[in-house]
Length: 124
Image (cartoon, rainbow, N blue to C red; front, side, top):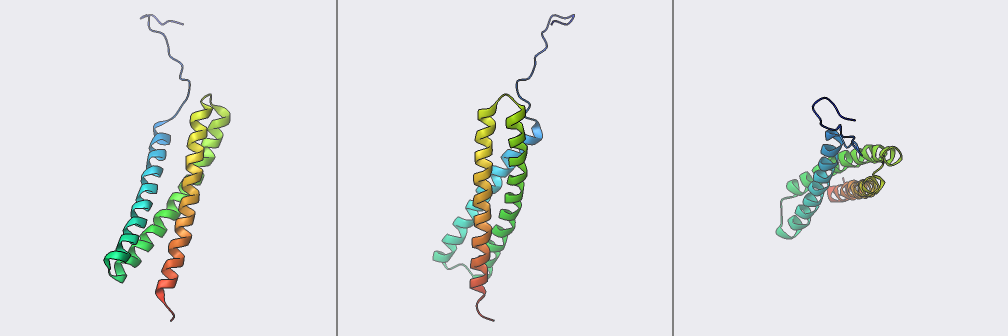
């Protein structure tokens, strides 16, 4: 179907909106941030960081991981819906696997950081 000027209207094969792409990128960035916090905590144990700094790293890791796990679950639900409604199933399936892995990793980080924080508090 042509318009008066002669250009064809293009029909999109998939509809990855800007917000979906930004959300996936933000999820990846927060997951990398959690990995960096874990690395800093491990390095801090060998470099003798102060206890307050180590506790701050654990608290920051816990909050970032909680946010990212909830964010990953919401995006995973949206991606699961996209698998059934859009034609690009492989790309959405890969996104879904990555989001589920990110959610599981962040739930593990939350639990581990809270356990370490509790143990490092000592007996009171």
